[in-house]
Image (tube, rainbow, N blue to C red; front, top):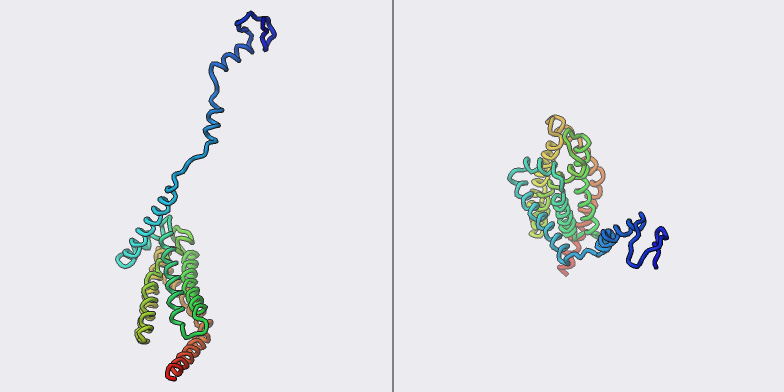
Length: 258
């Protein structure tokens, strides 16, 4: 004899009880729930192919490289169109890579130019920081006075693009210095200043699009203030630096003679 474990009724061998508990248990046994299996599957670790990360990184690098080439081409062929695209872009990786390249070139070649100074690297670092700071200040005031949609990051990426000529000019100035051609150095530096001014104004005009007068006024005021600060801070240091470099060069010349 057997007894139902749900209701306690006496059952014949092989008999199934007809109470609700027994019927429910029988139905559950006939239709097993998949939760345990799904849970086990969910707990299994996901195997990622070892080369997927490398392939993704390679794809990103390729896209950035392609974008860098496109930006540099358009900078010299269609700058107005390029500036519009950069300012409205949702990705600024290529633009900030350009700023990074300019920073590296400036730091390297200015430090090498200051070889006759006592601390060439510190001088190169200071000059480079100043050049980058000018772009940041331009971006900040353009953003604060903008009449178009865009974030500060968009503005900064746009002014980062304007450092493209600087990458070329700082290299040319270094080469002229190595050729002992000071007139060429000065001429290239002046051309760099003019070109940078033009492209910086175009960047302002892209951000302050609806008013030429406002764009001009903001750009001129910011430029004058920056120039005044540079002259106020850097004049005495520049004089001391030139004097120091001249003295070191003279000492080296005498040493080589003897």
